[in-house]
Amino acid sequence: MQTSTKNTLMGILFVNIATLGWATNVAIGRYIRGEIGPVTLAAARFVVAGIMFSFFIGKIAPEERRPGKDLWPLALMAATGIVLFSPLIYLGLRFTTAVNGALVNGMAPLVTAAFAAWLIKEPYKKGQLFGALLALFGVTILITGGSFSAIRTVGINPGDLIILLAVAFWGIQSVASRRATRNRSPLSATILSLYMGIPVLVIAAIVEQQFIPVSFSPGLILVVIYLGIVPAGLSIFLWNTGIKKLGAGGAMVFYNMFPLYGSLLSIALLGEAVGPAHLVGGVLIIGGGVIGSLTAR
Image (cartoon, rainbow, N blue to C red; front, side, top):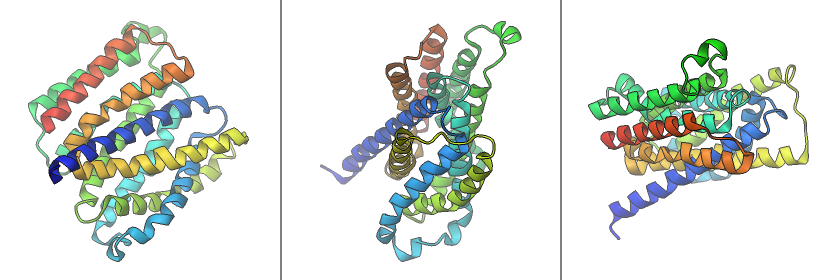
């Protein structure tokens, strides 16, 4: 098998495992929302991930163990992908369903492309614009339940909007990751950004404890360990590796499996109901993401 083909297949496998891991994070985050605060949960799982990655520091080249000239993209990865994205996802899941949360995440490829065009001047093609508008229409159907008149009586679910904000931060993180991994390995970028973000999250979690104390249980501890090893550790590393092998556009094509995986897990594990707005909105969001990603590819 040629090296390029092997790299492509490995990249596809890596990003699919990453998105499946993140999909379990959405379902679990919704399930345990009453036991632990969003910031505390994010801090706890990243501390676990940090402990796991400490065993891999020796595999990083000595010159890549310091931020060096990549300080600002790494700091941006930490601020958006570690400090802001995860707490906002968990906060949003306190108000909306896991199915909605997973589907709204389908906007990430298009948001990333928009930030890439703005921040690093990557071309934003007509197909990407069409996909973005299609997905945005899908998100609108999803958060309004397919009835704009319902907004006046029921209002828009704040959880959906919070998760949409989280997706915007993830888009910035992906662009920063692309910049940071030009000169260093994905493992180095993952570990350094993680360690830069953990202290901020831990301090914020201590403050949150005054308002949302943790309901400790053996089950919660096991869940936090899983979230730290898989979604916070393995998935982020595999995603950054996938970007390096496939390019951001190629990786984002398969990111669109995230809302599909997340919806199926939420239905199977949480018994969440799916209505016409979910089906129509989901098809538009995933379809728009695929069109935009393939255009970028």
